[in-house]
Length: 407
Image (cartoon, rainbow, N blue to C red; front, side):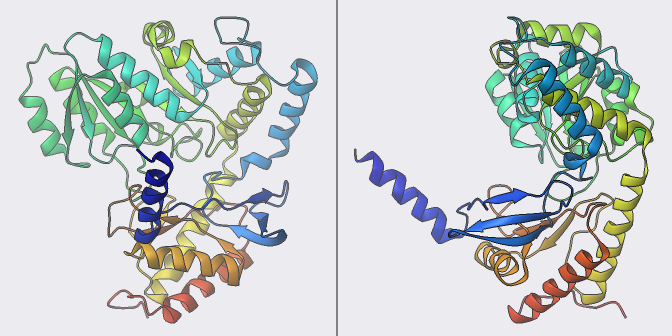
């Protein structure tokens, strides 16, 4: 077999479909985010980022930067090993205690990424609980899907956010059989929000564990930034809450929180945790500073909500289609992969606006979109420029607008 020819043919197929991913070479500007320098063919051009998961701009917060600098001076660059073999620093311990307290749980466990925390935790739980069945929301993230698949446990996929379908699957299983209901709070592509209380009601009735991914909610929702479960007053009803330090908290890493026995179980049996070098202490220190700041500061969340509401209003006035939801994520719908990439390129090249096109397999075919994530560090001038550019391109590219524009 000609391996290289096969690789090239598959890549060419992606290009023809409009689904080939191109990484944009960026240099973020500390203290000026969402401004960045885009490096293109040997030149640097200023751009404004509108698709970052650094939802609140905490990646440049002075407290976070200072904490990381101090930890670098105290402990150096790397952790030096796995958590089991010399790599467990006091910064890790402090952060785990803070995260457990944030979610009202007995314990927490750090991972190197949110992907790893989902993959390792779900695969370990589902494979080791005798006869376990995982009931997975149809819109769950790839990290959850891969963790369930790796466990080789039986799985039932229930229709997205459909409580009746979830209950139908639960009814078909013996009451005493171990079950995990795995779902997210805020779904990253459509921005819709799970009915957590109602899912917990079903879990209680049918004897299931609840596994909640809050990665697109921690830092953003609830009085202390613990997520949708905190906002809705149901944190204590969730068996395991999984989160990330890489989005609203602005650093990197993932974690789980739950009972002391549950976290110790995963710590002791998850290969994706046991055999991985620990996060650098400076990363843990920066994340700790971010979590502590957002537990008490609300102005970032308040300002972000204001800007999300304003952009939605302006898009409605221009009849530019976007999915309605109650979250901070604004999916502007294009519906064609080639057009989506073309618009993204025009925004970048002609307007200095960076919004990565979201195509298949991240979203279903026909669901191609520009995923906009307003932040408190976007200025009103940034907002005006974004909306003006989108309006001009919708006309230039003759894209469909909503049937009735707001007056």
